[in-house]
Length: 316
Image (tube, rainbow, N blue to C red; front, side):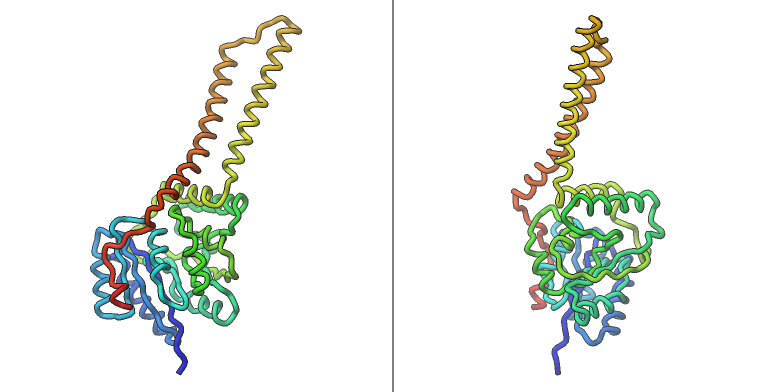
């Protein structure tokens, strides 16, 4: 009898005790539907303050397919995904949100895409943002357009982290050991043939979103800095523009004095010029500072995550 393929489902969790029962039910349902493959469920607990870890351990006690990794502190979803990919033992690896905003039934066409259609990866993207705040939706659309225009990576509008990858894709992603991770960009940067599978937006099955607007903005900024030097080029352009403006104004002052012998009114114009130049300089310093901060963080080479509790070794 031929050996079945093993699919590792990486399941990042942060305070998901309300959603986990629904997730567990969905995992068992999809594993029964896909009985032609074996599953490994790898839960990543991102230092939850509720009963998330306790429930993971309960699932592990009654099902040998369940593994869990619990962090020493909150390392963010990026740290959770990296830990999951690093410890996945499957022939194929998928990332699935615990809140079920990623429909598990899409794993069926995803698996067909990578095993029958010749793709290296299959990923899901939302065709609608129904139920999401209007402003957040519009800003997300602007970000995706901007990211694709100024960077050397391809990020599909509405793309989720939900994807099924072959082992060679996972290994390629793990080669990128950067600390300040932007996985949506990394997925596109490594290349490989990807099939995009559309679906309509799904609301959380339980609990509340853990991604405030401020964090989403910082995450978008991280993505731009990680995959593009365009902000530095814009800063340089503003510097050149401000210098040209100062030269033109100086020529104007000299010519007016020579031709009309009238002094240009000084105080208002000087104040405006100082404020303008000061704003340009602060903007350029801020842009350069963001890139320097990125270098500083990467140079320290701190671990992407730290494990406090796990059963991964026990399962091997």
